Length: 441
Image (cartoon, rainbow, N blue to C red; front, side, top):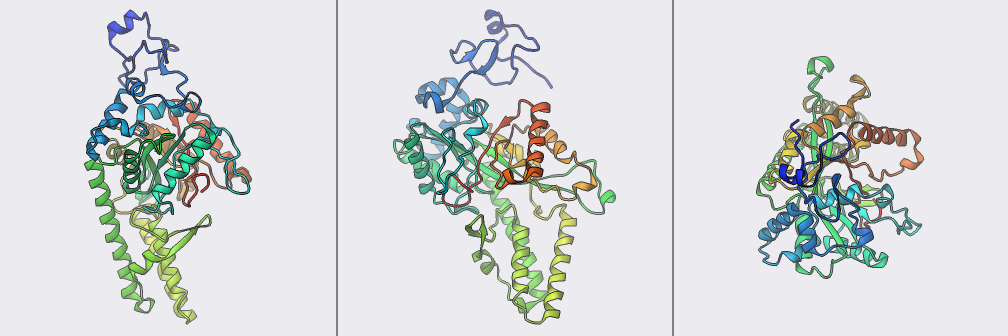
């Protein structure tokens, strides 16, 4: 890896800064060595914390984070806005990295009371929320207003993002609302994001060894991305078209084999399922669990068959079909066009903005992990980092984890591995909301 210090050689000599093992952090961030917020023996911006010091005027933030100024300019151009200050609430990747580096785990945990309202005064960050545009229930306007009200009540900003599955429409709407009335949302720091379904294929595992294709399904979070990036939007549309095609093919197979089931894709889309008490759509074309949802839908149709022998026959056929699907694509929720991690990172950062994290690492479906040992997730994280990944959802609020020692031990082992092996990985976090509260899942 070719590492070079920040700034020019002459700048470094003028400031009498020498390269050594413990002095300079060769992070690659381009910042001024004479800025008062910088530690001159470590190029990290020190103590940048808008939750304590308040949101800086946009002019100062632009100087501190020049790439973010360019980022907001690109967003403004996409919206046809001439006054870039209307996007002061939007947080670019340089600023976000510094905020997260100066955050602490309690900033992500609301510690709810019996009414579902935060009791933890430190809570001020939620970088994982879903809306009506994917598998959530939130209207964008309601989400923003709820965040602003909380920030006003606590007298400090709140850092939030919309990270819908494989769609940018909710994030686009939020940016437009903020730009249309920036004073209304002046206590919000908003991070344009997406949660993208991806796969990991371990090159050391062959089909011959395990008897089928082998892949792990996981989700990546793109933070401070440009939701108007034409290349990214084209990729997502292609993904949805492919998903639509495979869903139609699967349902056609079952309708042809068992016409008595009266299968309809329109019916499947209209059915809702319960997610932690929230009623969300059974599946949509960007869902990370779309294959599981289709399988559930087909089993529900089989339940309508009164003849037990026939019902058992249909159920067996469903299970056999989806086991063959898993063997073909390596994991039950991997679709034909699901990108691998390396490809996903490349497309999310294709216009030079944003950074990428692994979502809820302890929830990754380590399908068949016994076949390769317990080091599988560590291998995924290592390759993710090599391929340009920057963050782990270290502070994800796992539901029920506090009551499951085995789960918390697994979470802690992942975090310990990242701290030891990759201490420069950014620790992100969020609640993974699917309902109509920014405080709970």
